[in-house]
Image 1 (cartoon, rainbow, N blue to C red):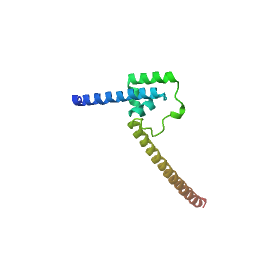
Image 2 (cartoon, rainbow, N blue to C red):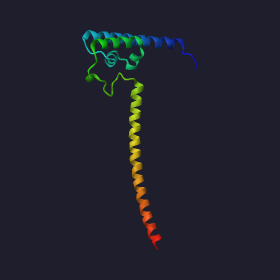
Image 3 (cartoon, helix red, strand yellow):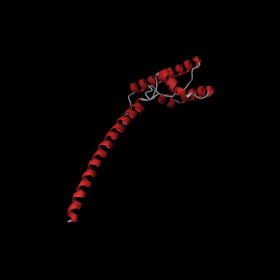
Image 4 (cartoon, rainbow, N blue to C red):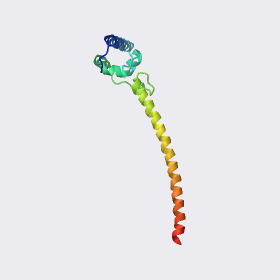
Amino acid sequence: MTPMPEHLRQATRARTEEAEKRARAALAELAKAGKPISFTAVARQAGVSTDFLYRSPELRTRIERHRAKRGPVPAATADPPGDPSTSAAVRALSARLTRQQETHREEVARLRKALEVAQGENLDLRRRLACYEAE
């Protein structure tokens, strides 16, 4: 694998630093407003993913420290299924899995119907054969 060019490394570093800055500001705003602090709340406020927050040791520690001060976040603030702070990869994989499940359900229903037809034909042929064997 070829190494990443320096200008791309710098751009990545700058983007990460900007996201960390937004996350720290969001954490401060939430704390100042007295709102419940969670990874999801900070991610929404800062416009970053929860994955980003969990992978940043400094931000993770800060959020966990604030959470510990206030106690557990009520269940009402749990992530809704289409949460924008969820990583894009997780959302894409979830959507793909949902489509595959639906496709498999349709295929199983089609195969069950075909099996019913085949079993009916098999039973009919056995009955016909039994008539010839009786003679």
